[in-house]
Image (tube, rainbow, N blue to C red):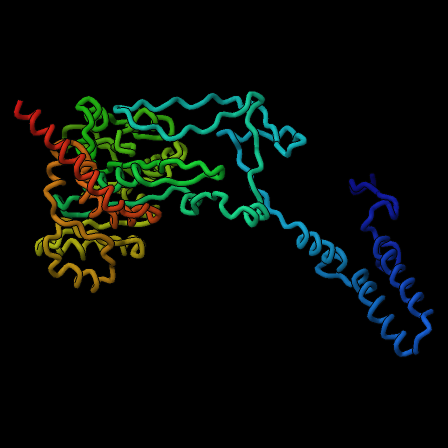
Length: 452
């Protein structure tokens, strides 16, 4: 080691060390082969111009490939890389079969990288107020610990076109959709519950193993003045009281204790209720608390978050809007409700999120002048929901309306597609008939039970 702290390496000890004429040993060897080939061609009993052409075409490219630098490297290296890529083009995909990511310990002969057993314990299972069908369990790690397993390559995808791939929509992170309206009684909470439960019950995605799993959907009731999503989902009174009266913000630590699983394919989380003036401490909802909620949802494995913003917006609600992929303004075609279209549009554009906004026309017996006003504001109407009595009946029973009436599910399909663009198609007519008969039977049993 010299005085500058550098290790002195003897000449020619490194392959890339220039030897003569600024060329390395490998380059000089290739140039020697080119000279040898030129000498052999010069000995051929041919007319001299022909021999000269053969020497230039035969030995010239070899000499150029050895001596010509391209982006700081000899040209022959780029040729070797191109040949290797052409003969064996592979881009491997792998997945870690454990939630943690410790350091890699070794590779066995099958191409599987074994990882040491993680020190962290498994997170506790969230307590559910009502049972729901659990999604397929993730395969457990082997006794030797978590493993990183190679699952495919580009060549595999070409030879096996039917191999499953993950939904691209899921790879971008948490997908947030906000329902908002400054007017009360327009059905904002109803549509948020219906869309979230319908997507959570119907939407599926496919893993790299080809395993089909249900989409994990979180319904966030952020209407702090009058939260009602828990009532629309038929939760018991103790759960509703616990959701609406606790004053700890749901962060990654307390999220699992606050979130409630339902039997309709959606998990409900309600923000702490805003107390009336003079009846409780001020509990402002800011960006830090909102970011903590979304971080906790992402860590819990949710792919979609449907937010009911409520009518009174705080800084935390504005943070949800900034993080949302789309904002659905719920309006009614009534004349007295039309000014809310302009108010919503002005508010969202002032937040710099105008391209995210779309309208949902609810209780639309007659669209009236709503399409013209929305077109003037250059905001699309993604769904039109008619005024159906099934929504009121289902709300009184504490169930989503689409579970009782197949017609409601068909009506809600454009809204579900606006919430999750990969939502499956409308059920066939036979499925509708079967669902309609089942709904009629349930209503008949409910009516007989009420008379008793």
